[in-house]
Image (cartoon, rainbow, N blue to C red; front, side, top):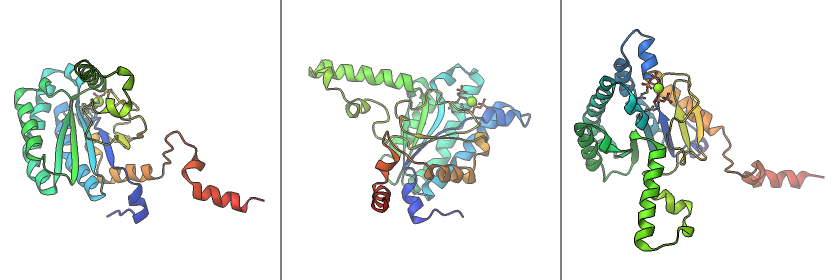
Length: 258
Ligand code: IPE
Ligand code: IPE
Ligand code: MG
């Protein structure tokens, strides 16, 4: 079992968001239909979520179905929705046992009724949990989320007579679906693609991005640990200089300077 040292643990991300990509290619490379890849992709979720819990990563967000995935063939979409249903039925007991609160971001009204219902009831059943937080992005698109946020903010302005000039990021971010989540510290994308595909575009402003060559069904616990190890080596500067981030080192340099 890989353990992070005490000081490494402090550097681990609080929120990891994952773009679970490559199920189709994984299946194709085995001469199987795409849904076989999705089924194995769903099976893989548990090990990564468990590893996150083990290392104290409190928030995990999984991109499961994008707004644009609605353009896929009907058969693939309905297969994915059945897999979602199976996943939630199977995992509910574990979520409750582990104290994990389930949330969803995305337009659930665009899912078939049965999928919408099980997502909503699982969210309801776990709403008192607070040890860890699992969020599924379902029929989610960042641009659509931002447009809804603008609509909601505009309605508030019209109702309250507030001035639009008062708008700041903390106010606006409360109109996004991620209002209850911290920004992701680390975004992992599997299958070697270097793009965000409409995922958490604004929330990712200062996220570290890790791209794994592995297809999602092969992205196991060890691969997740590798991503965390890579993350803790990075210096997150948030616009500052390195020296500003390490004032102690800076002082010691100045004190020995001639
Ligand atoms: C990710 O795997 C799962 C979803 C997008 C639902 P893909 O289905 O995108 O797999 P590839 O990218 O075609 O290999
Ligand atoms: C992103 O993967 C969406 C999910 C993982 C759910 P896609 O496979 O849909 O992304 P593109 O089309 O390759 O950008
Ligand atoms: Mg893909």
